[in-house]
Image (cartoon, rainbow, N blue to C red; front, top):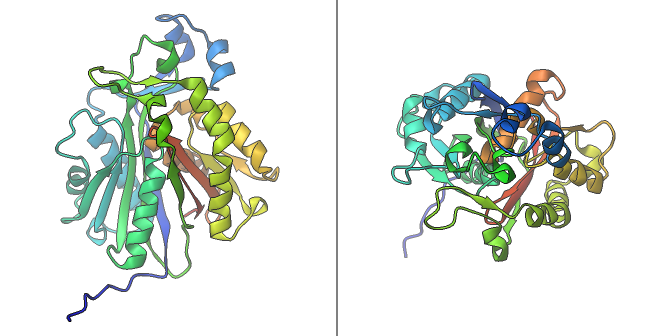
Length: 322
């Protein structure tokens, strides 16, 4: 019997470069208060958001993804022809066919990459990192571009204060490449599908709904296990973590998770949500890029990340920052 041959991949994979795109328009809490029953104190006390970015008509999913992806490629030191996989993580595509992964690759000058879209809600970026890491280690890809991109304002009722004050737009990207020393830890992922209706766009409706209190309870009580599992699988503990950058869903959730993990005082905690709002699959790369650009995080730091959201899905890893 003829045996199927398998390719030999790299010992590990790591992030080579990060990039981000934030829409031009800043929307403050005071601006929202002029169109709905809310105010700055109410919003900041509940979710910790001071402002968010909303995309203009010309800031499409593809345009934002290309902008972020181009920056990530430049930061990686690679040329587009060295990339052979593109994963676009998004939960806000208004046109399901065709997907945007191939378009992003083409626009960036990447030659005929394996390209696809992935929808795991706000966990999409971490799911995509896990897939890229596996593909490189098994030899299915050499270098991958992973982009988290969202226009949540397209699927949000901007007159509903329960969602309009939270969701925002943007794109964040990472180039992942082969490494002799692993820079992406094993993924700890899963789902609680019994709560699939907690965040959803119900059939026949144009905008999403969210059971905010149910999601808050789930995130603050059920996801510590995934964070601990991600560290255990990577062979590290809380004292080893330099940067904690979970999905930027709610500042109170971020702070609760950090407290439950008993991270050391020196650990830098991402609070990008204050200025960016909840950008779903884009939030983690946006937060990491901001920390590196500000100097709060540095190359070589160990970062603990966790994406979680619609599905309900979750995925976390320990990463070595580029």
